[in-house]
Image 1: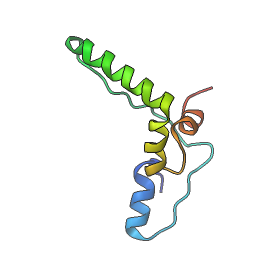
Image 2: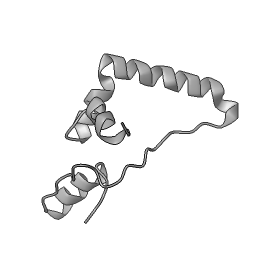
Image 3: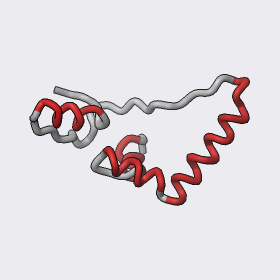
Length: 81
């Protein structure tokens, strides 16, 4: 079965099966948060906060809480080189 790296480990644990990630990943579809044009100020604040979380390591900690790798490793795996 193919699934995504977020839901796959959770589903596997819930049904009691082992799962492993394919290398390279089978397909990558970046997901983006989008804002309405009228929400430009909110989008700017969001971008600034995410940038701060990347720089101070908070985003890495969040990723490691739910995935077997941090944000920077995810970028290396998912972003086309």
